[in-house]
Picture 1 (cartoon, one colour):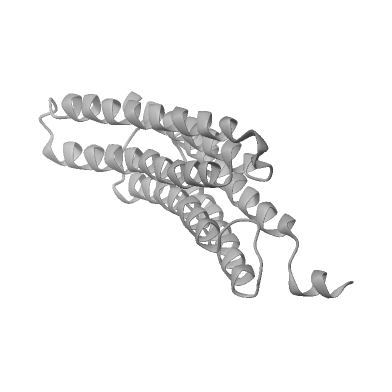
Picture 2: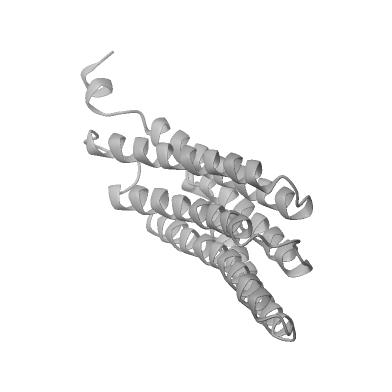
Length: 209
């Protein structure tokens, strides 16, 4: 191993960790859809979702550790840190939404919970695709296209949240209204966090194009 290899970690390590984080977020979003479509055994499913959240925390910690000992990085350290943090935020909101369904002891999901969860998954898949694109920024337009799509999905999330709240407010059960409104908002917030990640990715694409 040469001196350069000892001082400067391979670029591959950062990209591998960021892609691992994006893959983990995608897995958690896919599991979220599974949960809301097969709404049973929620306690154990929440426990499994927490394993995704813990894995995400560990990956983020490893990225920060690598940044602290790296002299040269493939992207600006701030870019890597912001992207790692934004990916971690997405999975935190997915985990929080799942846990809220369990703690609120809702008897069933409704079409808005299911559709918002599917929207989260679609958004996360776009984020995952864009993260894989930063390994080679020659075709930065592909990343920018993914970011535009994430923004479109986030706008759909806003619209769906409004529709869901309007519908639940027709219910005469105040406790049900509170519970479901909170869950809707938590799921929509997960799409907001996807948009935060896309903003970081867009900045990276523009800066390095």
